[in-house]
Image 1 (spheres, helix red, strand yellow):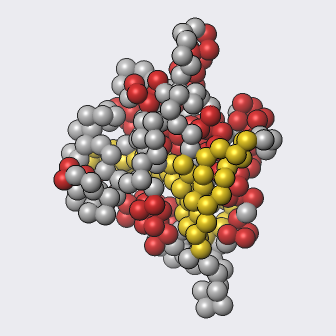
Image 2: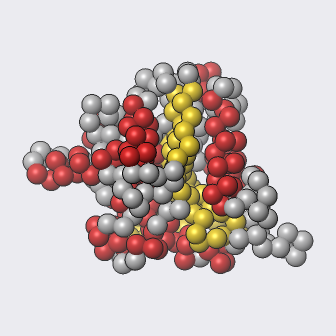
Image 3: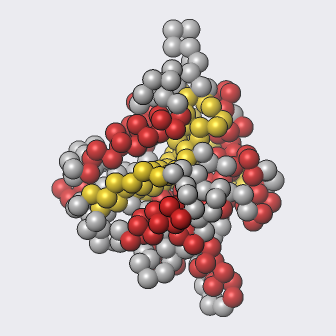
Length: 279
């Protein structure tokens, strides 16, 4: 395995850090033109969770995907600061796809909680001028081919996770705040160019209500975007892989919801064509 960290550049600034977990092509293994997944940990836009970072990358890596973790700017970094960093990460992975043995048309964004909001923001806004202009890229450079959303923050409305949304807002009220509230309520931003999506959530989530995923699913359906969804009866929030490896308290160990990772891997490999075309 190759592991390295790089700084993510937005304009003339280096912001955010991208950790790369890559298969090393060898004479025995050959080159496989692998799918890739770029992971955005959660943390309410206050911090980037360790539990939703490297362990998730290694889970996808073990299934045959090259994996990346973006630690993006947090805490009152108003929208679209983190979005620009996320899109810059997509552009970097695509630009280096040949070196990394990645299919440039099989790049998936994956986010947890507030990181799910970030992944969905990439999915909805990747072609917008306010993204491509500051990055100096074309829309095709930053286009995600799929998205995996884990108990995502989606809306700025009735069912919002207020802490996450407030961290994206300016300190003052007014026209700018209203515009950002609209842009960050992603159930209203889904469009025909939003990529196919895998979502999962727990019905009893008391932190980010399940309505966030339900509204996003409805928007995907309305726009005829393919999606796969799994709503587990119980489990709460912040589960990561739901197992011993990522649990820091008993409530994070949820064997029923744990199956999400295997389901997401199968979905990603179907999207990516599988290894040697076999799923």
